[in-house]
Image: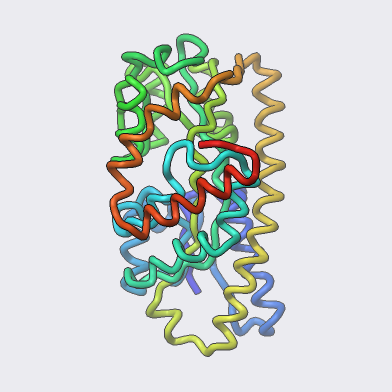
Length: 306
């Protein structure tokens, strides 16, 4: 089976799918195997996702942004300030709510196998610590090419600038943008901290990534093989999360040595209160609303608030 990933060879998601391949090889004496093409060798995520829906690719690790464009239910885990903690996120993804979101992909000729972590996203910039939305007023902030992310940045009073991740470092250096938002490893590995040394822990989005399979390939599998693939995918999640935690800690250590100015945001309610119009704009179906309500309720039970 052929699998695509935009991340480089040593990235936790790539290593997780390779681990899944190893499990399948061992359990089927090599009858089932996966060949992973990492580093965007097969094209952009949007392009490879389309190829996967047609069956030209068997497996694909994708960000949720391109999934948002085809299936409204995938917008749910991308909502800003929905999850109160990593524990809350994992409980949802590993539970019936997470399964329902993955199941929504089948009508688009995709089988959702599992979720991989993509970390807590926070804001960083070239100018000053961000403590309130007012500190972001007028800042040019890079975002993914996503209507949801653009709406979020605008709601906070900043100017959203959609841009490829590969262009961010140069844009920061040249002053084309004032800042961006991402997780610890991306902030470190992209060297963005060199130009934007202020990292403010808003933790505004914890959207995961997904491993999906072509439905046309899935439909050709025996029931036993479907079970083996699903099982291997779930086990790869545990492996991926351990790799991700280690990568986050390594990034934090390097950034601390580099003198990055990190600040907690004491009162997130000022940010959260501006998200209600964003939620209302993108959560429009009864199915979406029901699952959001359950996620919020579970977060409150666990001791957090959104």
